[in-house]
Image 1 (spheres, helix red, strand yellow):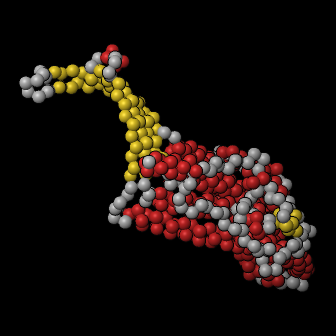
Image 2 (image 1 turned 60 degrees about the vertical axis):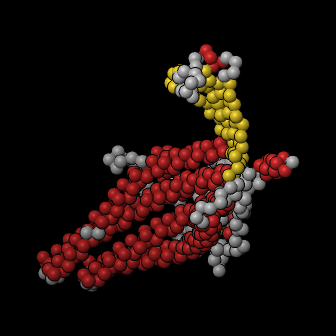
Image 3 (image 1 turned 30 degrees about the vertical axis):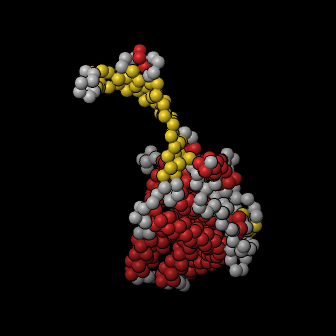
Amino acid sequence: MKGGRLAVVLACLAGAGCAVGPDFRRPDAPTDRSYTSEPTTTTAVADGTAQRFVEGQGVSAIWWQMLRCPALDSIVQQALATNPGLEAAQATLRQSQESLRAGYGVFFPQVDAKAGVSRQLYNPAPGTLPSSTFNLFTLSGTVSYAVDIWGGGRRQVEVLGAAVDAQRYALAAARLMLTSNVVDAVIAQAAYRDEIESTKATLALLAEQVRIANAQATSGTAPYSTVLSLQSQLASTEATIPPLEEKIDQAADLVAALVGTTTASWKQPPVALSDLRLPEELPLSVPSQLVRQRLDVLIAEAELHAANATIGIATAAMLPNLTLSAGYGVNGTTPDGLFSAGSQFWNVGAGLTQPIFHGGALYHQRKAAIDARDAAAAQYRQTVLAAFQQVADTLRGLSHDADAVKAETEAVETAEKAMHLIQANYQAGIGTYLQVLVADEQYLQAKSGYVQAVAQRLQDTVAIYVALGGGWWNAPAPTTSSSQP
């Protein structure tokens, strides 16, 4: 009677789907209403454009098209199609999905078949029967089933499911990092080219000044030292071009690698800084939604989920394990005898194992699992804080970028006017070569500063899309989430 009751209890436990250990509960989203202490809704007007942050606006999954540059779009699309790192992430996701499918095998009986033949010697007690040598043919099948009483198997599948989620988010993160790196590299290339163009324009002015100084020195109206100083300035300015060309080449090499090809075979469509249009409206997700769309936060959440389920696995290992088994087979001394009367054999059994003493290993393994869960929870909170910090930094950066572009624009206009005025005075003989040198240098610095400020504003615009998660959840063909046990 007691044995029957025990069987009923075990069957109820197995069928009810109970699992020891804490059930995973998704961390609550932060309750902050903004990312900065003083929320900003718009930036200053610079280059004729003020960027406005629209709270709650959806983030496009093809956010780079907001820059409205077909050449850039073609580069990004090629990178998405042929980048080896993205292919590796996709293969790793498939691997984790297959591991999850394999993990579901714990819920099914294990069935095996066996066939064998052996040569045996039968040697009975002396004085009874003579010894004999014979062949023994055997066919048998076994069925075994580990009853998941405490849910250790379900927790193991839960860990595998969380691993699938983490890898799916990692794939989306790899895609986001790939696209942002490509766009940033293309913007940098365009900025370096503009810097070179402005430097070459300054070189043309300096060459003209050297020609005038030579004429004045020849006529005796100016010392030859003026010519030497201008030639030195010309050479120094020329020396700034090779480092910029090197940066362009390095950026091109980076884009080629991101696209998944060699530099020698990569033909990049040209993109100028003027080809990129600055979006006037930028999305701004509410803080409570950020943790549900930032991929690094979601990866940390999946890792926390897996660590939480591991506690259940360690707890189940400390409790009794029940295994049911059965077997059936036939044997005979000849193949034909396998199916004769009396050749059958069978067995049915149940085994209950209770860990008694393992040197404290099981206890401390469970404690270690709890500590790992606590570490994952702390890492999750740290990841959330870093996500909010990145968004806040980017919002402030865009505001400062607009101020910088506005200031650099005024600096370029002022320096250009001063340069033309001083050059006219110098040609008229009422200015000095030192004034010309200073004016040229100021104009070159202002032009370079302007180009860098424009490029930084574009790159920070890219950064806001990345900081908000890249819009992967708005993709036309989103990947379905993994099945949980």
